[in-house]
Length: 229
Image (cartoon, rainbow, N blue to C red; front, side):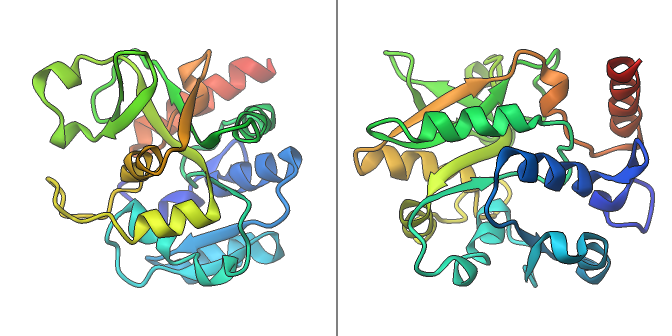
């Protein structure tokens, strides 16, 4: 982002990115919000205040490793856990709610929020089986040439049941191009124990857009301005 400020504290339409995420989760009916903080996490925790319970990721070892840090805070809980990104600020409360409804259906043990952006470069691809069901998510750096042609991508937003989630996280490895614990590898674990993982695709990819550069932030700001005009 070309700034010392933690990315999730960059301002979108007058508020930090992460504040938009927290508000949407609250409006969707989240019972408790747990924020995983790392680099300069004191600032993020201070900005969140009482809106979220913060847990620490002292080393950055990937998205799966980040979620592992929340396990003690969820000990004794077996229900659905919605995982959202602090730098993906425009996901609507109704989208989070739709994911929760899908996760409540019989046999469903996971839901992945996907989208079809104009340019899929940089995103993990949603790989489906011969029957059209989500089989796995492949990060771009690990994808084959054919997999990179897949238009459906991962927004980094999921629901998994707590027991499956943390048991599955104990099975994943860092055997990948980035040497990290990939949270999307949980899809394969859940399928392997007989659970179904469904996808919901956003109608408008801007809703699932993340912020990695000042240009991304400007695009989301422009989109919000058009929406509110």
